Image (cartoon, rainbow, N blue to C red; front, side, top):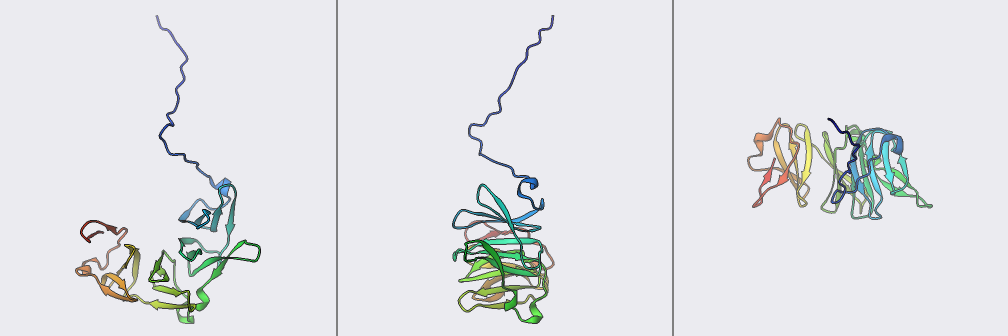
Amino acid sequence: MLHFARATSQVKTIGNPFIINYERETYQASTQNWAIAQSSKGIMYFGNNLGILEFNGAHWKIIEITNNSIVRSLLSASDGHIYVGAFNEFGYLESDSTGNLYYQSLVDLLPPEAKEFSDIWRIFEFNGQIMFQAYEGIFLYNREIQSIEIINPFGQFGFAFTDGKDVFINDSEIGLLQLTGGHLRQVQGGGVCRDMEIWSLLPYRDGQMLL
């Protein structure tokens, strides 16, 4: 003889992290988000296909950038600004007289021949400057004198990485390079990395790094 009983189970939640998933219908933008940064005030920012998403924990809004391109990279810097990298565009968020944020482009600081580039994939704070990295070049923004120094690749740059002190970047013709003091030099043995795509560079041990 079979006996049937109705039973219920309880999902274990003790010890699990508290996670809320937000769907695109909630934040009203694209499904793709490429970067994330948190301001000194605790506000969250996301690099989205449609611009910069701002979330204060209760409300979402989108901040459009100058050319309405995809925002690939963000950096919350020590000066309190959120720096932004997109296709053929980079800049930062500034507040108006009412405290609302808007996008301020820095591309006008570039000479005409340097204003055509692709995506800004990485943004770092480096030697007191803000570094924006595209495949076509490195743009070093000096906040004190409002100028941009351009470092061109020998071939084409790959992604840039930092260990918190120096910046490393691969070049299609030279190999793995290290940026120190505003100059690029080849890492010892870095020539083997030419024509490679480096997707991650991590600290290892005794000053070594894993690629």
